[in-house]
Length: 595
Image (tube, helix red, strand yellow):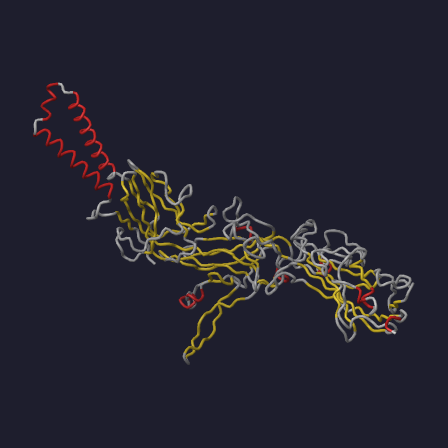
């Protein structure tokens, strides 16, 4: 698109004057006619006689005539001048507005100045005076408000929010209003908009974690969150598809050439921040999230530049591949975008420093777009990557030796004397539910993003019982969800560094140890006392044992964290323990009430 440099100033034209102007002209005419009539009648001959009243009347008539002439002249002296935007104009990131904007520069003022307004429209050949198609949507004035309230001389008149505009030719109209007239003085200017769709908007898909808005993708410190608005920061891991926009153009033969998506260690300054350096994304412990930078270059450049290959609000992790499509029976060879995910668990640096072990830690992503004239455009996004494992292991029932049956018997190790149904029969369930910290030196969220664990017991050939998670039964104490434990339990005795040659855990690793996951009320296994239990302890029908019978039961522990990945809205790292089986015998005497 060829840029134009065209300024259009309002031309003289016949128009109906506004009411205040018409009234001033009528009053001026009447005063002049009255003055001439009095002169013709000799009424002012009394002036020579020293008649004071005649002098006063003459003075006020002349004063009113002078005032009206001044007012009429003032309304013609309002200043209206536009000097920018013009030609091929780049939109700029405006962090204060959280948008892409174009600055409007010029002058608005003059004697009797009241205020000014800005409007815009796409160029379609109309004259500046034509009122069709003008819009004030997305116009921002210095100091806020719905219009410019102060005179401006060769300065900023306002900003146009061009974020959702398409590339093309646009026209801006400035109208300056005076305090003595409602008819403004207007002038226009035309420009060609050079679009800059360069931003990262989402990490991971289905549903994926968006950039927090506000402040939005133009703020380099905006985190990745679970939802907008009001979301919380979430870590991502595994295979993630990065979404956003990477397209610039098009005027003065300027258009996109290539783009790349890179990573670097730590949270780095964004393009609008002091200390921003694209060089920080090259060198050791940096790399590209793309198989190769995506370029719209020969061979078949025109085909690659087809509109369906523009990367606007879609996957940035993509590549151009040659494929075939069939339309109405005819097969064509075309270039099309093919999306893929970035395998962060295999491609990030394994162990570069203490804060980035096991391909995890704080990273900054850099989106870099180059146009055909060599200009570069950037956006950054800060991301927590979590590729550390989670551990889930059920360790048995406290006090029950390995490879032995569990007997429910009055006065035994698990049932109080007399087997009273009104008193809990507590037993400790042991295990390990552990998630490694992203950064071992940071014990706060999201470095600590352990989510929950849960326990299930399944009767052989029968139903499954979800175990309430409580540290004690007299009385029971629950968290927000009585079936979920929200704190780590036990110690796995290993860390992810053990699988990486030459990578040593940041802190000494304690030996493996089971701890109490919850207390289980063994009354759930006795069909006599199970009926007295209330929710959430009530077992499903067919779960408890009749007295004098035995059956096998399987215990399993599930644990998960809050990491997101493609297709995972949290819980990407999750694990069921191996089944732990035990034979339980209900050796309590029969219930005489059923005899």
